[in-house]
Image 1 (cartoon, one colour):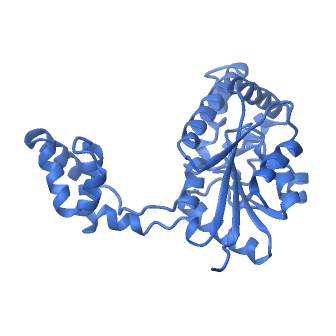
Image 2 (cartoon, rainbow, N blue to C red):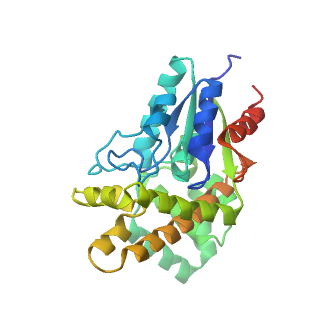
Image 3 (cartoon, rainbow, N blue to C red):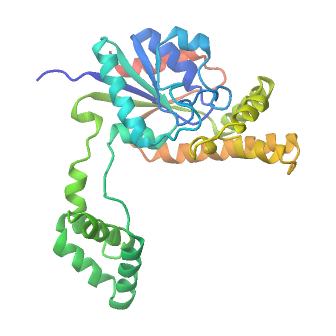
Length: 308
């Protein structure tokens, strides 16, 4: 069989050291970096998104950075399409695509694929919920068994959320959720890939986050956010950590020091959510790092696991 092209991922929470390690890895294995970050796509969000520096971008070719105005929306579907195009381009250049980021949904969309289920119907969901209350869980489960026995085999009869979702999909699309899921195409259809994660002691990670926020303010964070707030921001761009907190400061709802502490707190909470998401993915190969580990040492540890 023809060997599949190889794609590599480097994931982890904010401030874990992904960017610096990725630069070292890319230079050693002849890779180009694809950003799996929902905010680095925006021009003018350099400090806010902890974007790779100009020097880092010159050292290694980067993709999906500075491709949109903050007024434009970005989504997991757009990311997936653009990332797949970048992967093909990099492989044609006989280089390795290295996807780097902390947006877990984006990584999953690439590795596992996107499931298109034709939307939702809140009214239908309410009706099915009422039916379960009046006729019992078993009644709805038997209905699912009739239309989609494969899905029913994988769902517990009392798991009404999933039973109702499967029936909802069938009613909307006239196709079973089992059939639709077979159309999910992950990367393994065309490529071999490995996902590596950088892990750190939680206390150390939180200290790094606090230090990063201080450094961001020293680098001109406030001025950057002010410029962004003068523009029409898309719903996606508005979600960037710091936008809401600085807006409240500018509206005299809090002091700058209080806004800064909120950004630190919310960044720590964000990192915790990122870790919770990534921990659920059993395919991730975790590598421990610490403040004593240099980016080069981190890169070498991960490259050793590649078995090149």
